[in-house]
Amino acid sequence: MKPAPFDWHAPESVAEALALKARHGEDARFLAGGQSLVPAMNFRIAQPAVLVDLNRVAGLDAIAVGADGSLTIGAMARNAAIERHAGAVKSHPILAEALHEVAHPQVRNRGTLGGNLSHADPASEMPAVMLALAARFLIRSARGERQVAAAEFFLGPLTTALELDEMLAEIRLPPLPPRSGTAWLEIARRRGEYAMMGVAAVVTRDAAGICTAVRLACCSAGPTPMAAPKAAASLVGTKLTDADLAQAAALLKQEIAPTGSVQASPAYQRHLAGVIAARALATAWERAA
Image (tube, rainbow, N blue to C red; front, side, top):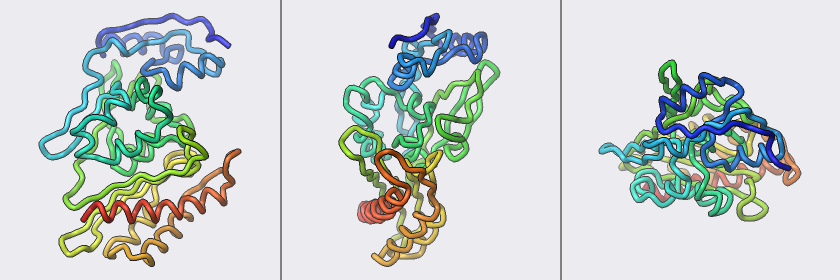
């Protein structure tokens, strides 16, 4: 199939892009890398009357590491560029680890982080990673700008906190504390397919080898990326022994809400979550040493 007729605009500034979106409202969609929107248009699942193409807008694809180790990523940064960015790999290595599992190289070369997050597919890797990294999103409109935490951005399947006239402009990641380790693990039927289950783990330990903080988040685990705060809290104050990891895995399986798919039943997804959560936590713990 081919898309329904639409008007195409290619603004060269953020202000111009936002003005177009404000003018056309729900009839307009922003076009970033097109890896989700264009297939939906071809099948006429999405039929925007107006496309506001962001590819000529300067400055939206910047990637910058702060002196404190924080990371700022423009919404139009290509996934492949983030995966290869030396500063991002050093400051937040889980990004490259998870992005390497996103679809295929051709998709990562065109797809953008902002487009991925705005699409809000609960089976996608990056929303879960953003949740585990406590990301904040800079959102802009012709009315002004605001920041939203990742935990408040994803509202449901393919649904976010973005208003009709808003765009995700920037992703802001706080620095990882000293002696922190991260890991991403997922299981899919074959390379490039959506994960049946994926887990992001961020672990921090003190000089004595005691866990001081944990963040856990899963994809394909519910209507949004799912955090597991009870499982994470159970590990604080421990040395992440096998028994500690088994207890955390059991708690995580109770916190998520997988709905199942043609590839895996909810029960199997819960089983996968427990197994790979324990593995991801153990890997992150080793990397935190």
